[in-house]
Image (cartoon, rainbow, N blue to C red):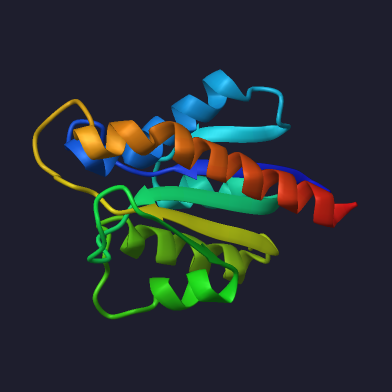
Amino acid sequence: MGGILVLGLGNILQGDDGMGVYVVRWLAEHAPNTGAVFLDGGTIGSLLLVTLLEGVDALLVVDAMELGFKAGRVTVLQGEEMDRLLVRPKASSVHEVGLGELLDMARLCGCLPARRALLGIQPWEIGWSDTLSPPLAQVLPDVGRRALALLAEWRHEAH
């Protein structure tokens, strides 16, 4: 199996919007030897990200997503289920538009990872703040462990 890219989306100056970035940082600190590349995608443009997808067999995107659930609830969407969410007319995340375009560009370039998933976390509050809300700060380690479990599942299926 080729590389695994874990992409954290969000703006850490917008409170819970930065959850994807916080999860990627948690993973890099607590599980650095997974063989995956952890990337803060909050400041990188879609065009540059497409070049990073070349040679990647699996992509896990972590982002805060407004789905109307209780704050901190995690939703995992894989493969075509993820793709369908990203083509909806009304995005539940400000990053979905960019993520959908990224996947479209990767598809056109022939580098769309066969395994892909979106780990979406219901935010409590998005606004000017450099910290997560208490509900999201509390679930951060659990979200990290869910990401690690998915990565382990992908590695197991590849063998």
